[in-house]
Every structure is written in C-alpha cells, then in structure tokens.
Image (cartoon, rainbow, N blue to C red; front, side, top):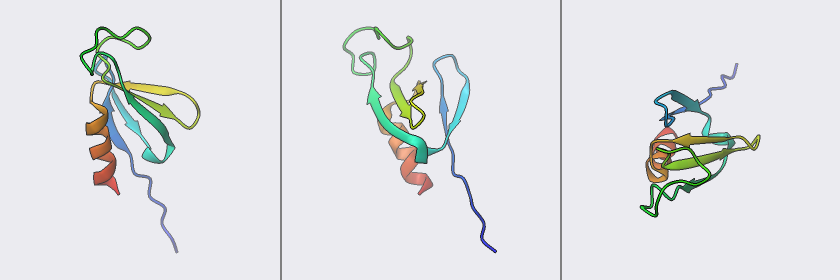
Length: 77
C-alpha cells in the first residue's frame, strides 16, 4: 500500500489572510517594485512583496519575500 502526501507551504496575503500553497504548482515567482524599494506597486496590491504564479495561471500575492518563500519550499523537500 502506498501513501501519497501533499506538502503545502503557508504564506500570508497582503490583507493578512493565511494561504496554503502546493509548491508543485508554482510556475514563477517575482519580487514586486515595493519589495525592491523601487516605489509603489502599480499592478499588484499594496503590501505585496512577492507574486507567485500558479500552474492554473492564477497568482498569489504575499507579504513574504520571494527569498523567504523559496526557503519554505526548500524546507519541505
């Protein structure tokens, strides 16, 4: 008998909501202008530091930095 286990990482949306994401479905991540101290975000909500694009083309904005999200993914492997 085999057991399949789904590993999720926990991130925080800019509004404070907790979001659980399956790292297997992440296709791209990028830092926002706000996170890089290049002014306010123009296309992403204020307070977002990282935008994660999912395989279904939806995206998740997080308060955490992309480096922090990558560290979470590394810990789950």
